[in-house]
Image 1 (cartoon, rainbow, N blue to C red):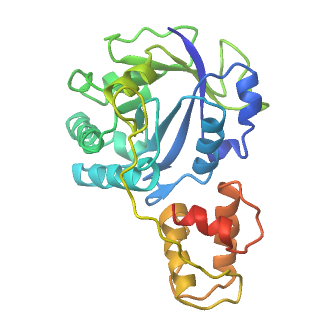
Image 2 (cartoon, rainbow, N blue to C red; image 1 turned 90 degrees about the horizontal axis):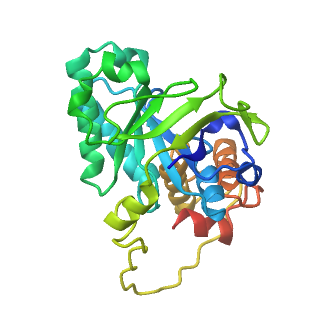
Length: 297
């Protein structure tokens, strides 16, 4: 198969997913976050994920790694899972982006162990991890023969790409700013473009990975007791334990970096507006029923 798709991040801004789908995009791989500037969630991840899902586009995710040790790789993988992957469904693999300069300098043995540790940590959590890197990096910086059980996403901005073994070569990034096969823009924006060569959605759903139950159906929700909780409307100037709870939730979901002091000041107002924007809510800085509903999901 050769399905056409794209990979995007905050660098594409408020990307027009509807227009991209109309132009023939059939899947999207979204940046979830990275470890190159502390541990963080990409500022456009939630918006891009919800937009793609609403259009029925299969979704994958990637993490820009800077792990230099096995311990750091495991820490990155756990953060990625807890803050990006958990509670969501991905029809495509979730990839470790291996291209950071410092990472490439640790030596082939060390870097191979780092990649293994990251992938194994996510395998334990029911995910299908993969590896993204350039065509030459796989053979130059890694003992890739030890990694071929994981899906490979190969960057080679060329007219063709021949990667061995073909059994793990499931995604080819054929262009970005340089694109020899088609325009480098999708939906009016320069972005990286890909061909999917293996039917990952069918495989992942069948195996019950990446948030799916076996056979492709969503896992049945456990029986729950339902209770109603009244929460106050919060806005700049509010002070309470509810504000502190809201600050903690913003830090968890949006990596807001707030001090959980229970004081709704300018920094909290800015974080609320950013969160509302990422979730497609009315951006008014007021934490009412709709914003609370998203925060406590």
